[in-house]
Image 1 (cartoon, rainbow, N blue to C red):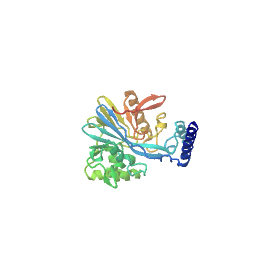
Image 2 (cartoon, rainbow, N blue to C red; image 1 turned 180 degrees about the vertical axis):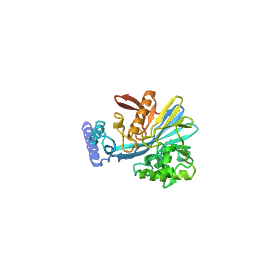
Image 3 (cartoon, rainbow, N blue to C red; image 1 turned 90 degrees about the vertical axis):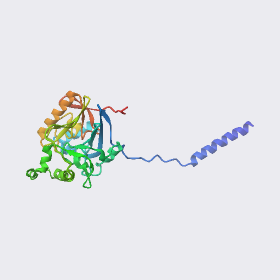
Image 4 (cartoon, rainbow, N blue to C red; image 1 turned 90 degrees about the horizontal axis):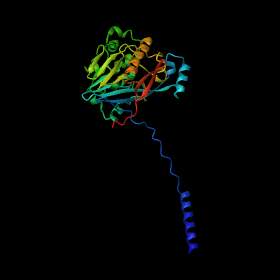
Length: 318
């Protein structure tokens, strides 16, 4: 009996081993290779803030920044970055409870296939373009206004479009058009903004102004003549949406005097950045940047001759 049991166990073990070798190994799970939806969400007092990613674009920043190319590359390398630098293009959706306001719109189709994700990410975040009441533009560069249209059609049919009068005058005043050297920006303005003008939906503002309760426009100029930041405030909590006051945080936070070729007035752009950043560091309020790494939200602290960017802590909004 014992001999039979030993033979049975041995036979079963052999059969199991044979089965293992006879069965083909399962292949590894295929890689998905798609990003998570590009939105984030935080509360600012009673306001809901939803940063939206329009995607990223690779920029040869060593050629664009007003610093030695090799120095820029070395600075990036110390932060485990390289050039061309994959650069975020962010917009911000603010729900005040009575108005849904979009600040900037991304590049749309203006900058190639790696951008133009804003509408998809807005829908993933639970909103639709038709729900947007107002759109505030920081300035008229294509990576901020391209998302206004799709195949020359208005994307946000129920929204009023607003921007600083100085920015609009560059393109609406016939006397200025012949002076414009930046033909790409002019073409972008014509393609993206003119449909809203023709539809009677464009309403420029002049100077600093509260556009809806809790959102105030603050002109900075420098990057472009009418470049504008937007201060969002609810229950004493503040968020300054800074547009293009900074492009390459890995370099310009530590050395804020370094400007970029996109700035129309280099000296004034550095001064505008210092003024806004000093105020944010002193006031302890949040900033949100179009080209800070998504979601582009954080605080500033002064450090040496520059600043340290402190990204927001992740929250599940319990």
